[in-house]
Length: 147
Image 1: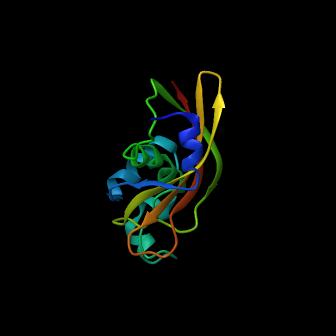
Image 2: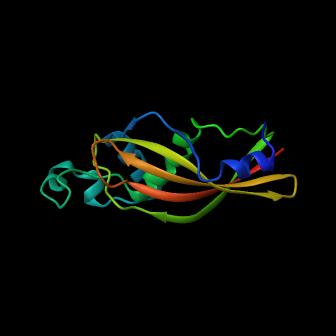
C-alpha cells in the first residue's frame, strides 16, 4: 500500500484523530521564553483572569507548533524513508486555547501529487478544543514524503 493512486483515492477521507493534550501554564511559559512573546494574556494569570478570555491563553503559534506532535500520531498509508515539513498553505486561529484546555488534531487528506522522489501530501488539520464549538486552529499542512 502507499502508491500515489491509493492516496488519491483517499482524498477527502479522515485519516484519524490524535489523543488529547492538555495545555499547561508551564508549556505556555516555555513557549513565551523561546519566542519572546511576553504578553500578559499568556503569562499573567491574575490579570488574564480579569481579561477578555477569563484565563491565560496559549499563543496561536504555540497551537500551530503542536500540529507536529499531534499529527505524528496519525499515519499515512505510505512507506516513506523520510518525510519533510514543506509548510502551510493556510492557517487560522478561530478560538483561543485557555490554560488547562485539552486539544487534539483531526486530520483529513486534502491532496496528493507526485514530486521528484516521492509524493507531496496536503492535509487539513483541525485543532479541536475539548468542549468548545470552534476549533483552536485550522491549517492546511504540506508534507513531502520521499519513497
